[in-house]
Every structure is written in C-alpha cells, then in structure tokens.
Image (cartoon, rainbow over all chains, first blue to last red; front, side, top):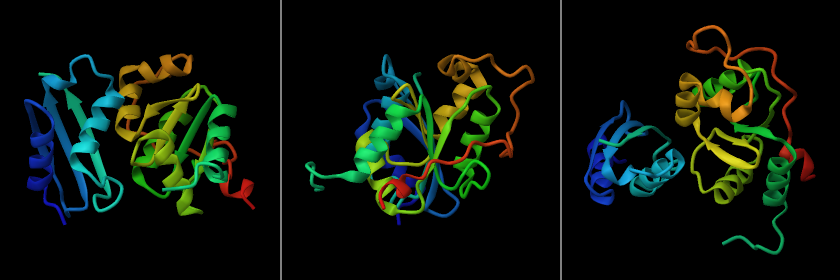
Amino acid sequence: MPTAEDVKNRIEAAIPESTAEVDSPDNVHFSARVVSKAFDGVSRIEQHRMVYAAVGDVGGEIHALQLKTETP
Amino acid sequence: MTDQASNPIRDAIAEAIAENRVILFMKGTPDQPMCGFSARTSAALQSMDTQFAAVDILPDPRIRQELSALSNWPTIPQLFVDGELVGGADIVAEMYESGELAGVLGVEQPAQEPQPIEAGDTGPAPLGIENRLQ
C-alpha cells in the first residue's frame, strides 16, 4: 500500500514545480494539498485530474484522495 | 476495453445526465448516504433551492466503472450541472463555501452562513440506473 510519502513523491514527480503535503491515517484514505505553477489558468476540474493522474489508481488501491489544489 | 457498440449502462448514465439538469452520482441516497463524501455533497445540494436527481452507484459496480470512464473522474460523488461535470466532493464543498455553487445552479445562496452540513431528509427520490437495465 502506498504511504503518504509515496503519494507526495508521485505528485511532485509528475507535476512541474509542485509541492505536495500529503496525510494519510491508514494508507488507504489520503488528503493532499498541492501547490503548483502548472495549475495557473487550468480549471479546478483539470487541476484535480492532473493530481489523480499523477497519483494513479485513485478510487482503487487509494480509496479516497481529499484534494486541495492551489497556485503559488 | 468495453465494447463501444453496445454499452447499455454507459448509455443509461449519459441519458440520465442529459435528462436531469442537476444530477448527483453518489454512494447511497440523499436520505441514506453510504459515505461521508457523498453525504456532504448531497447535503450541500439539499441546502440549495434546487431540484436534483440522485443516482446511487452502489447497486451495480458497473455503474461506477462506466461513469468514471465517461466523466474521466475516478471518485464518487460526481456532480453534473447542464451536462457538465462540476466536480467531486472537494470541489463542490469549495464552491458551496464560496457561493459559486449557487451561481452554477442559478439559485440564491442560502441566507445563513454555510456550515458543516448534515444529510437532510427532504431529498428527491433517487434515480435507479440499475432499474433501467433490467
């Protein structure tokens, strides 16, 4: 099962100039706050899709990912 | 991959989205939500002066699978307005708190301060996608 650290690394590796704070009480439910310049001019829906794509298997192994995306 | 030529579940989902201006796909029903994220999202909608259709995705796992394939969104709940995906639980909560949700729905923001919302008891009858598939 991925840890919060794994999820943080996946996000920061996939999304340019991003910083992610990720928490998980159980390595199944996660919450993340992601800040990236790459979100600039991108709709919130697409911002969340970018993070979901970076994390992978959201809704599967990762049961839930509570998400807040921001631009710096 | 699924067969594009014949996909009655995806067709039923697309039809439900087209036929209902405001439609929420959730786990459980507005009266009996089966997940905290679905509960909060349906409660936010119930606090708005708007009708919405609710679809419980739990009765058949294919509903969720096809919905996510259609919407390119992996999680539940999913709120659609005017045929467009508005977002999941986090986006709807943000929009509720900022007043954007009322704007998208074309209603007045409820007068009282938004507060942690409880699932209410005034929900509409849920739409049964699975019932259309029998």
